[in-house]
Image (spheres, helix red, strand yellow):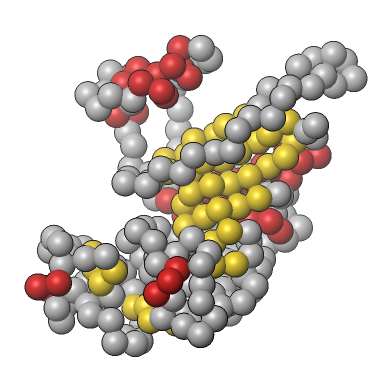
Length: 244
């Protein structure tokens, strides 16, 4: 059985756990190939983790660090999510080409099939690969994702064997999960429509209906309200698929 390489992508308030580890096997040189779990987070500073002196308890991460290697000098390719994720997966500086800034929720796939990626390298090394959690690297062809059909290209076309993702961020529409190529629990009679330019559908918004919010919006989060939270962008349909 192949070993496992998973990326668990975590954002504030959202935690996606990875699948159970596969048994280890020996390669031709009798060197054990470990399973690999890469936890990639947004908005976490060097001093936020418990083992580095943070005040918020992180006991499970601390155990991982204590049984492995701690790094005390590191750099990020970008201070924001989409470009730093792009660099992590491709090994390329995101700013070398326009259009790799923080992506809207309906952006086309920024990493195109055929580009060398970290998961593709791991596949060639004999690993099963998966990504779980926040994606925010765009999905679909030049016109963006088809939320009501097969969503491709995406993680499966650039080296992942399995994906269960939030398309962009928890504060952007569409607030759904995508498993491999399809929106989870989508009812075909209630199709999803998304716009980041103008209102679609009749769901209330933070601007028009602040009384429906569990807390007041800020920083542009004043569009479609879902589960009492006003999001970035407008969304209609997909009621059975809503998450978060």
